Structures are given as C-alpha cells and as structure tokens.
Image 1: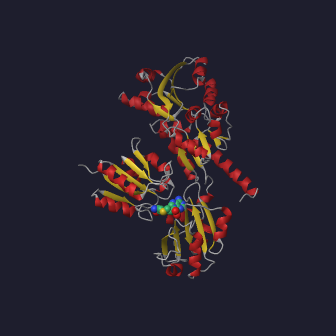
Image 2 (image 1 turned 90 degrees about the vertical axis):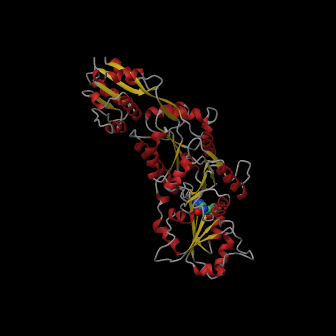
Image 3 (image 1 turned 45 degrees about the horizontal axis):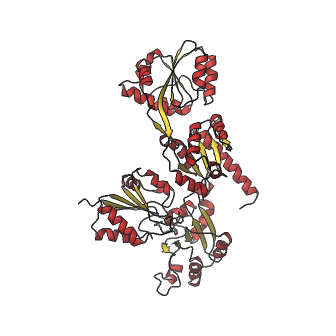
Length: 517
Ligand code: SAH
C-alpha cells in the first residue's frame, strides 16, 4: 500500500514571506494541511483549492486538539496515501513538539521530511531591531521555555547557571510566568538593571514591543496589559533597538490592507503595500474568464489590417487578445500599420511586453482623457477596434460613434465574481483586524459589497479606510453609501498606495500630537 508522506514544515514567525521556498512547495503539493494557531492563515491561501485544511489549535467549540489526537490525524491521513503537510509556527523543533510527531511517524514507518523554519526567538527580536547576538555585547545565547513554573521542585532549568552564565536569554511562552522568571534571574545574580524586551505578535501588523529593565518590567506589563504570544529577550543587546528598529518605522507598519482585484492582478498592489511595511490581504472579488462567445474577436483578428486604431482599456484585454491571436497561429505582424492606444501605463507595459510600442497613452489614465483626445483627432470614417471586458462603460464607444468612427467592440474576457474566502474576511472585519480596503475598479466595489452581504456591509466596514484608484471607482463606492477616504491622484496602483501612505502618515502625526502614546 502507498503510505503517503508527511512533511513537517516550519511556517516561520508570522510574516507570511518568512517561510522557506521548500516549505512553500510542501504547502502547494499537500493533499492535507494540519496547522497550528501561530501559523499566519495567509500562508494557507497558497494551498490548492482541493487541499483539506485541518486546524490543530483551538476549534470553534474551544477544544484544543491534544498532541495524541494530532499524531493520530497525521498517521491516519498518511496511511490513506496522502501527502500531509504539518505546518507549525516558527521552527518545528524549537518548542514545537515536532520531535514527538516524528517519533510517531517513525513508529508507523511513515516516510517524512523536516523543513526547518525561522524561529520566533530570532526573527521576532530582529523585527523589533534587536540582534540576538552582537560581538560587542554577547557571545552566548540561550533559548529557554518560559512555560515551566520556575518554582517547581524538579525544574529542568538550572537558574543559577542560566542567570549569569549566558548573556542573551530568549524565553518562549513566558508571559504567564514573567514575574517568576524575572525574580529567578535577579535572585540568582543577574543585575536588576539588565535590559529586557517583550515583543508580541512579532513580524505581523499587530507587533508591539515593550522595553524595560528586569526590575521595572513586571509593573510596566501590568500597566499596559501586555499579553501573549510574546518573545521575551533579556540582555545588553536589547539596547541596540534604539538604534536599529526598522519594521515599526515603515509607513504602512501595523496596517492590514485588503486587495480586491483579481488573483492574477493582485501581486503588483500587494508588493507595493508590503514594500512599505503593510500586510496585504488578498480578497479577489473578480475572476477573469474567457468570453461567452469568441466569434466577434475571431472576426476582428481575421481582418486586423482593416483597422486604423486598436484601443486597449486594460492589461487583461491585452493579454487575452494576444492569447487569441496566438491561438490562431498569428503574431504581431498582423498589426502592421495599425495604431495602438492604451488607457494607462500598465496597459502600455503589457503591450510593450508583446513587443509593441504605443502610439498614444493619455496623460490622465482614464476613459474621459481618451475621449478628450479623440475629439481632437480626425477620426471620422476611421475603423477602430475596441478590445474590452464583457462589462464596460459605454462612454468610449459612444464617443467614437458620435465622432463618426466605424467602431467594432470585441469582448476579450469576462469578469465574474471571485472565489475569495468571505467568512474569513467577515471575521477579520469584526475583529477590527482590517485597516484599509482598496478598490481598483467599479466592479471590484460592486462584487465586494455583494460578497460581503447587502444587509450588513456598512456595519462591517465601519472604521475601515476606503481607498479608491480614481473618480469613477469613487462614484461607485459612494453609490453604495460608503465614504471614500482617499482617492489616488495618479490613477495607478502606485498612485493608490501613495495616497494611502500619506493619509496614514498624517493620521499618525495627529495621534502623536494628541499624545496618545
Ligand atoms: N516553534 C515555534 C515556537 C512555538 S512555542 C518557533 O520556533 O517559533 C510558542 C511561543 O513562541 C509563543 O508563546 C511565543 O513565546 C513565541 N512566538 C511564536 N510566534 C511569535 C510571534 N509572532 N511573536 C511573538 N512571539 C511568538
């Protein structure tokens, strides 16, 4: 019998990009993923849609799967012949009970591999600007579990040696026992003035850091009600944070920003957000599919040289048009003598990657600008091919008609509702875990509202910043009774991120002025 395979994978500390390439491959090929509470759910979006996802943390009934039950699931699924990816926060062997799971796999002779991950004890301090070692400060480093009651008679931790024998101490799971840990360190000889930092939800938008000394930290924790999950780091290296902190300084730090455009278009916006320290949350409201009928586009492709102008209003239009051209065993030579117009820089880029140079791109990236320009052109009697989506504004084609052009409209692709995880987003909105929502077209707005539910979308969006790529999209947002908080001045993805950034910077400045921190 085929026994299946288990990959024991470290998912990293939280920032979804801190997973290894190998770990990501294991997610993509898994038939079944068993994951823990500290694994960022965003990582799971890389799994195939038919992959079974099993949560091994707290379930809705608040029952935590016991280690034995997790082992049983792994064995059972593997014995069914499945590829099982066991996904754990950080590294599977650093206070992750990975060893116990492997022992079971060995017992049942199930083949496995271990894919190490970036452990929280190193990455979380790094994201707070604290290097766990620095040659001017320390030469020893210890990872310690803080889960063990330090006053336990048979404690496996030798506090006398730990307190003075190791320069940097990193405690996992230590929040509950913090007062005792601090006391043990001091009574065993560590200076009460030793710097200590607590970092919770490190590498994520929720990251918070609290710095003090051993003798002041407990009081500070009580004052601000600092909670789990947190890494505790003790030692002189903590002082470097003042100089080295970086993540929290990024303009979009702390913001989780929803990207509503289609999956294959989301990456440029997601990247722009992440470069500025925000977390992008992909919620594709649109899916791009083949048109219902290829006949009009095929007819146009058969007679391309008849046209004087070819107008593209989106990147998808360009992609789908050229795909169809190739399908007919044709290439750009068919476009000899035809002038090309693109609505904006991205569409122009898409044409350039097909080896074509645009004859016209409006300065302002919207249909109205093309219309204005058309009015200055002698377009009467000219044959114009307009390549577009199934739903599109009529403005362009109406204007062309009015100006006497002979216009052919072809539908190159159809946009349908995307397959985003609505329940998950609703929950995150309820938990106030979403800070900004971006809309890059009117259809993203319409679909988003419909997916969220007409009854309570307004309530769910309360307090969330709404960002629009341009005036047309903004009108659609307003038509649903929502307020546009920011609108891009340049109607591009970069323009959109720019205005979000500026708004957040000015908001942060205001909060600082009011002395909230
Ligand atoms: N195997 C994991 C550790 C699991 S133990 C690893 O290698 O990172 C769980 C503890 O890890 C938590 O109690 C907390 O102390 C720490 N931890 C994990 N992720 C964290 C994060 N993003 N921020 C702060 N602490 C984290």
